[in-house]
Amino acid sequence: MTDRTDHRIVIVGAGLAGFTTARNLSAAGYHGQIVVLGAEPHRPYDRPPLSKQFLSGEITRADLALEAEGDCHGVTFMLGRTAHALDAARREVVLDDGSRILADDIIVATGARPRTLPGARDGVYPLATIEDAEALREALTPGAEVVVAGAGFVGLEAAAAAVRAGARVTVVCADEAPLIRRRGPLAASVVQAVHERHGVRFVTDARIAHVTASEGRADGVVLTDGRRLAASVVISGIGADPAVEWLAGSGLDVDGGLRCDEDGRAAPGIWAVGDCAVWAGIPCGHWTEATQRAGHVAGLLTGTAPARPEAAYVWSDQYDAKLQFAGELHGDEVALVEAGGVDHAELFVTYHRDGVPVAAFAVNQPRLMMRWRKTNRPALRTAAEAAA
Image (cartoon, rainbow, N blue to C red; front, side, top):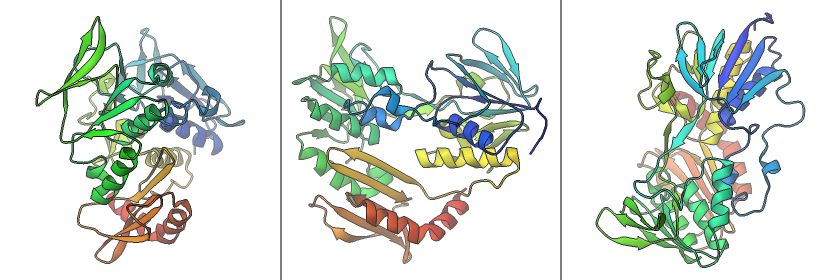
């Protein structure tokens, strides 16, 4: 770890990955300058609740704060500032106003930018920022006709919040069932059944061609097969792309994200963490991985032990169902129901490949999931290290 007080690390991005990197650098006793650039005017905040408790009004802006007292001691936050370009050779960030910041190390943590639906904009709601969630919450009124584009976790969580607000909800899913591509058919069928019990309608194997409008505001969507669905509110949950367009001309490889080695290094003195990063060909796919990779880079820069990779772990709260998934599926696993059942309010399923446990899925079984993750952590960590 450098003891130079004139050594400067600039972190571009004040989301989870950028904040976690800064916090870990500070906690490890880094003696130099840490500057965090954030495009939004807010201090770092937690984004997963935007589509859950925050959208439903159960928590406030203050509850989203990532910082605890004493976090990021000595860190300088430059908020409401956007990185416009990067001179990788000089390790210099060009800001939107033309000013420049030189650094000894630059960590790119600009996250991902939500994809947009073609057609009308007014009445179409992404869920990427606090302001997005607040605008959508105001639009979710009793009787509203809501179409959710996308059946990933964000879209499904937003659908649940819309139902609780008294709206009528239709989810447009590109596959034959929600979550099936990443979580498998068993989890997909259970999650779809949870929503259907609350009155949600699914239109599967379908994509939205464009959003239609009446008097300038969204009034429905047209699917690629020509069908039309009426809507007064359209929620866009069709995924996101790495926010790396500002790196064009930098000489860095930004094909599908900023490409790095297995330690997150894109070039000498240039690192990347979070949704914008691709490490050794593997994108960052979830909250847990973002924090782990941030800890790894901070460990390398401070000379402390880098964090060891853990298996993927994601969770979601939908209605009264707490969904948890650990591990990765390749499609060749054998699923075993360990507790509950697919038609019950509680379920615990383990997945095995060649007789080895590789993943687990739980509905309202947090203790079983915690015990399973603890018991299988060595095997799962080995698999995660092999994939890293």
